Image (cartoon, rainbow, N blue to C red; front, side, top):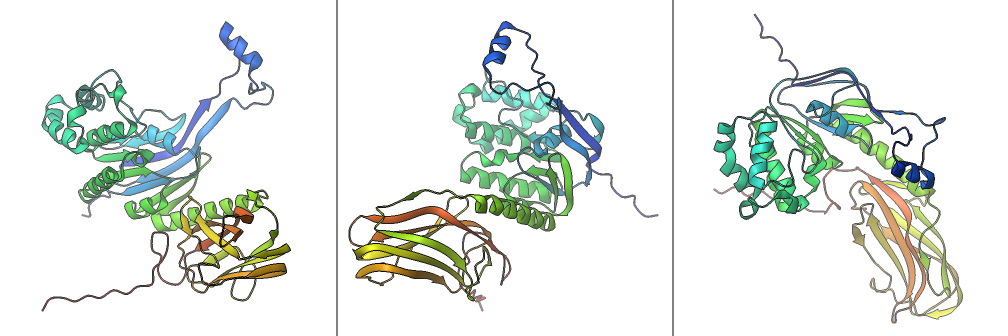
Length: 413
């Protein structure tokens, strides 16, 4: 007789969650005064009194699976996590959770600010239903992992956000959970401790702990999770293999971001004006204007210019920035060994990258005309032009650029 299939660790069955907006009726003198002066008072005739944060969502998470939940801000991700932990209860539908749950959600959840770190460890464990004997056995490990030994008897209201995260995470992972639920909280704290946390989560995954994680970091979720759930305005758009869902979400968000970027018609422009950049085009090797490229494509920035009067020793500059602000490069004609003695009239300058090394992301370009020998700017367009890079050529890597290199393996004899 075959073994029965395991039951889901977490099961959402047609789950919806509704929140009620404040109806605007004043109940105190203060509210009446605020209502008179507030420009944001809602109209009773037009305002929808209900917000459905989650709408008819169904999915199963099996024991030992690692599932990421993705979506824009306000999509219902954190609400879904809070319903898994019974902090919130669904308005409709049913949620079944099988196993002991440990959760790291908002900073300070379950902590009392006036109690010390030591007291909050025991308080947090009691809230989660952990017996005092178990927490006494784990106490030293919790304090050691959190690296807060010298601060453990200080009231947590004096902790920084990073210290809160250290203590909360350490408690969550040392309570022997069957299910670990982590919100975006890992974005807080120093990189060394984040890496330490992720290493510990990997160990928990190998030991069969079910992981549910919310993060805006798709690269992290691709590495950590086998499946993903994509929520949008409370609706579940997709549930499936992590790479498939992440790639579709990444493409959707990139297109949405690029549309908004392309619609922007204003940018910071300054300069004395003796020479002007009159047009900028981003083109491929055929000279066709485009905004989407693959890693390893030919990539060319064309700048049309007009010098209204003769200027000496000019330089042309192109700088590329990733959408998160990372400054990729900042080349100019003078540094490249192209010395222009004089500039007058109209012309075109091309900045040519024959093999684009940039990894998939959205990018912005700054263009400028300066004087090469003394500090004078004739025209400057700050991050005014946009393009997008998608994966191409070799298998996708992570990081900012793909560096041309080879590997060598030399086993010892």
